[in-house]
Amino acid sequence: MQIQEKKVPHLVILPLPFQGHINPMLQLGSLLHSKGFSITVIHTQTNSPNPANFPNFNFEPIPDGLSDGQASTEDPLTVVSILNDTCQVPFNDTLSRLVSDGPHGPVTCIINDELFHFTKAVADHLKLPRILLCTSSPTCSSIMLSLTLLQQTGAISITEGQPNTLIPEIPPLRIKDIPDFSTTDPDTFERLAENILNAIKSALAYIMNGFDDLDPTALEKVREDRHPTPLFTVGPLYKFSPGASNSLITQDHSCMAWLDKQPPQSVIYISFGSVASIDKTELEEIAWGLANSDQPFLWVVRPGSINGDDWVELPEGFEEKTREKGRIIKWAPQQEVLAHPSVGGFWTHNGWNSTLESICEGVPMLCSPYLWDQNVTARYVSHVWRVGIQLENGFDRSEIEWAIRRLMVEIEGKEMRERVGCLKEIATRSVAKGGSSYESLQSLIDLIMSL
Ligand code: UDX
Image (tube, rainbow, N blue to C red; front, top):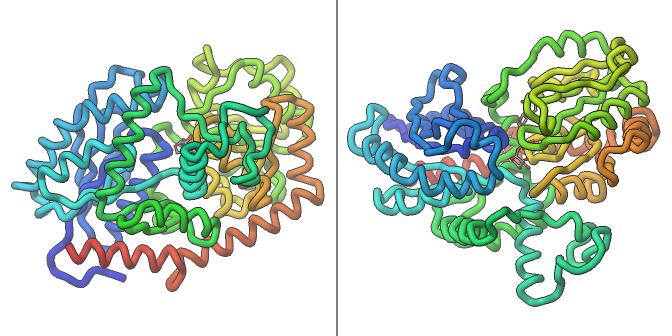
């Protein structure tokens, strides 16, 4: 699957500067580089990737107008709106320079995060084709399409009904699982959503980070909706490009030696990704739930993730009780951790990258979704793929203790481990020669090469 031509096609990639978006975009860039493409990353100064991790890429920073810390303190959708306004001119300037006299040859195509709709105007002006990467789940995208239709026809109103009420048209989702993208400024959000949809319709291609057999119905629905823009399912991207992630926080690799000393499938790994935060009471409930479960644990407490605190103050007596059993770190090498034979469960917020990583390493989940697509994903994990248990009442130490035991030691957990093991095999087959993602990647490469 290597490019034969002498001329090296040059791709410009533009990630959205959040951890859950940077990783898949750089994984895609690494994958295409391994197939012979030259890669330039145009990136915001905020949360910029580390060029040392990608010595074969060319990096071009652009100013983004965000003040220090604004990316982590503002509502993320507001940040996306701001960036769509502030990045257009510097992106246009940088790309114009690359197009006319770049050292890496003429630009063949742009690949950007789908939430950056401003690239449409720039690409149209420079007459460059544009490919979009969607970093959230195909399942959630398809649910959003169904919801729009149901609301347009007046079939349901998600503002009515109790949170636990099932929505018959989109089982097994309940009112409370519907993604909430509301912001402090609904007009801004509506404009943003409209611009993103318009930009999708005229793209050359649309890439999703998933694999066909996980939710074929959802993919079909998204494919129909994106038509005539072709959809390429090229995931799990991290399986094609292991080690191509770019952590914004330093990963603590010392936990790997600790994992080596734990019994097989005994450790529950806990991490709620790069955006979710909890308050001190929730921290306390989590801590005692873990301690009382008596199960070995590896717990990521990200700096800044406890509301109102720079770092964690653990409840009195917790460290003493768990010294032999647990380990707390600021940020993990997550993909390696999930692949470690000692890890038997993942307590996650169900960000799409984390969920895919858990499925592809065959690790069943405890689900505590936080926002956006995560509720839908958690519900699918627990009720469709049946590879996890959702905590339904926030963070309550007794529920946590019981759920951890169900996942880690009870027969129920064993059955989930078997089911997720089957999904792992399907995912592994999809990226191997002849698999659906492998073939989809080949078609994507053919399309770019035809430009
Ligand atoms: C966000 C949203 O939460 C998610 O729902 C959306 O689909 C993408 O953007 P985030 O919250 O960061 O992302 O979660 P997730 O999608 O799971 O991405 C986190 C990434 O950080 C993963 O690739 C994971 O491997 C990595 N990670 C996480 C680490 O490297 N170390 C950690 O300790 C935790």
